[in-house]
Amino acid sequence: MEITFLGHAGFCVETSHAIIIMDPWLSPTGAFDGAWFQFPRNHHMGAYVQEKLKHTHKERYLYISHEHKDHFDLKFLESLENRDFTIVVAKFRREELREVLGHYKCKQLVSLEDNEALAFADGYMKLYLIDSEINRDSAILVKTADQAFLNLNDCKLMERLPAIVEQEGPIDVYAAQFSGAIWHPTCYDYPKSKYEKIAKAKVRSKFEAVARSLETVRPAVYLPSAGPACFLDPSLIHLNFEQNNIFPHTPQVIAFLKKRLKKLKVDVPNLMPGDILDVGSRQFIHRSGQPVDPSNLEAYIQDYAALYASLFDAREKRYSHVPPGDTLAKLEQEFQHKLDHLTLHQRVTVPLYFQFRNAPDQMLRIDFPSKTIERAAAVTDTNYYSMTANSWEIERIFDGTLTWEDFMLSFRMRFNREPDIFSTLIHGFLTMEAEDMSWFCEKLLALETNQERIVVEAGGTRYAINRLCPHEGGDLSQGWVAGKTIMCPRHRWIFDLEQGGRCSTSDCSINAFALDED
Image 1 (cartoon, rainbow, N blue to C red):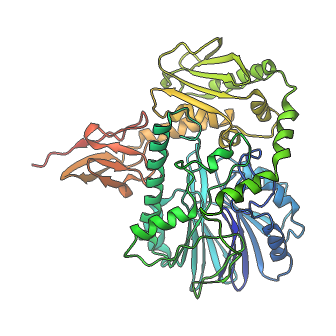
Image 2 (image 1 turned 135 degrees about the vertical axis):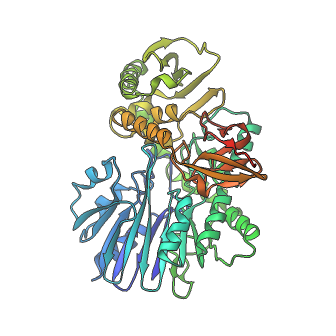
Image 3 (image 1 turned 135 degrees about the horizontal axis):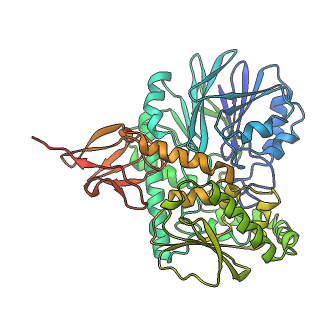
């Protein structure tokens, strides 16, 4: 088995009889409306994939893990000339991937359920799914008679790794995300000290999650991948150079793992697109030049950004003619449509304010319990959630350029919240499409009504807790106990066992209570 790194979360896995292309994000226009670009640059790998799919008699597959545009690059897929391959996707409840690819002319479209395998001549691939409505993702295992590659990409299946290893046996090569990819704290108006404190804690817990997964999987090689992207838009480029944020680069995770895993022998390379690993020998049979490291990072990104300066000027000019008032009217209608489908609206006790940055006198106030929206001149509530963005950025949702989740991942907005507590319902309300609101609420209710309880020990005391994390259903039987807290292995939420299982950063609880020791 040979594994070629395509960049970001992309890989080409080649066995004696099969070629499997994974998450090829190769278009030179980036993702999320040009907010994210591949780091390091990998656009040249498009020709490599074209050749791999064209000149071979092997079985050919193209796997898309989920619909995020840094994994699902439809523009690149449409550029492929030889389509004698099978596309493999996960069978999520939401059918966006299958609907879009249903019109794509290729050999076959196969959708696999969780833990379902698809055989090829000298092995098989198997998918592992997360489908929590607020998050859809999948991981893939490729296995032959004597070699195995497990690629988690963004999929936070840490709690399932023990079962996967037990079922599938040794994993030779393991790939997983090590950096952040979310708008908190990236887009929040925090003081610098608080911003950096949150970012440092997130990076530490992410690196620790990677380390613990390596202790479980025990691969010969770990391939750090699936991020971070880089940001070339002049309004975002500063994110590349912040000393502390949630976008660490590969040398940082390599240094952390070297100290953290002194007793575990695992190779952790700093990858460049085009690097080829021979799994049998655990050696790279091709390296693609000097990796980007702290010594050349800033110059690399500035040169990269210079290539796209005209792109961002054109973006703004295209939509600047649309009056903000027209966009606000559309937004009010869209939010009302979402409210009508949000069946758990009464649980949201703080209003949401939405304001245009380029028209600050135009603001919406959304009252969730009453399902009403009104125009407001200013934020007048003590407790509230607020969001600001340019009107022309929002207009790109209404013309179909972006989904709501695409827009949120563009990082082209700012948030404030008082108190500074995460609300799953507001998160879902802002990121999901209106037609998904009711499914989202049903999933939350299903988590709440799950009565399965487990017992964990912390600091010499046994506690009964809910087994499933209320956020997205992570299995707390695989959680990490530290002091009197337990951390969910999926998104690393921390619950205070002495405080009834309350989460310190959200309004959720795992209903913990101490058991008698008689």
